[in-house]
Image 1 (spheres, rainbow, N blue to C red):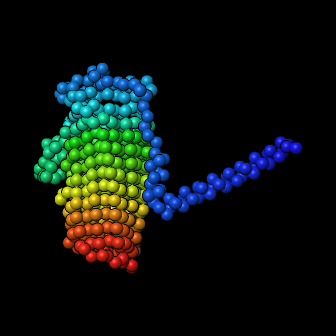
Image 2 (cartoon, rainbow, N blue to C red; image 1 turned 90 degrees about the vertical axis):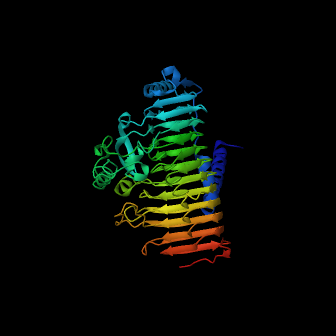
Length: 479
């Protein structure tokens, strides 16, 4: 006789066994991902949601935009974006032609889409960029709006094969960096003036509220180009970006970001191609970077402001990208105070006599923080100027970058990397005696030509597995 009690007991028994199986499977998945970081990367990729938009189109021309390259279209873009968002979202279409505008502020559920021959020309008049909450070199402040900006938005995109042109050059934006190379001359204002960059850093050290760190006009801190601030589920796809004032693609405190098929060609000062900062679950794939600074630079805040925010950048994935000119191919730092971990770089090509390094980690004892679990594989390096791998705890471009926050760096792996000309060093690494750089692994790495195999200071454990440099098989260094 089958009773409800029997059924209940059998159900409980089945659920118990099923739960154990689930737990067992979960442990297996966890175990696999822990022993094989690339399996963990695959799980991260699968977990990142993609943007989805309502099938409605809002043509900016219908809102008064004029594609003559001269008429200001700021209001037309604003109206089209707000109308699109108010009606549940969709595509804001920028047809072929040249559109001059001030800053573009995106809304949730909006895809700003550029047709193939569409070009958005951004105003070079600082007065067109109002004060908003943003960030500058790892420190939050009130400054000129980025050229394209989204804050606290979800499901937002910039797509299409058109061009975003910041129009920056040696007569606007770039001279603010204070370098004669970029048009600055003695007696002209720049970010180096006492009330500008150094004042911002001092405010952060004194914990001045962000709302009171008011800069903007008269302070010469250039705006970022594209900034997603505290956004979730973001896509940037297929666009070309040229002539940026400052950092180019800047996901800030954002999650689930996909940057796919983007071309960056901008050789101005601080023209980093992509700077994920305090951000997690970011995929950068199929992109080309030809830049005046780092091609990709993973950040997590500067000094006191980084400790205040305390959000590490993690689960950053770089796939199938091409790096041409730049200070580094894939870089972590120097604004790295909250830490960086779980970085995966695969199937990339890095090649230019004006590319300084392939992989770089840069920090110092004012930054602090922990950088760990950096995995690189299947990389083709033609020529780099300085070295294949550069790791330093003494980065000091501005001077006086010494403090009481000793950083930690560990677990860096390069696998199946082929280098024709590695420049001066295969590995150039310097750590602190009390905090040595730990566990560098080169597996199946071949560097055909390099001036010196390595220069190491306070590095603990360099593992060479089937690695050849200058034709010689390398032996591991245990210390």
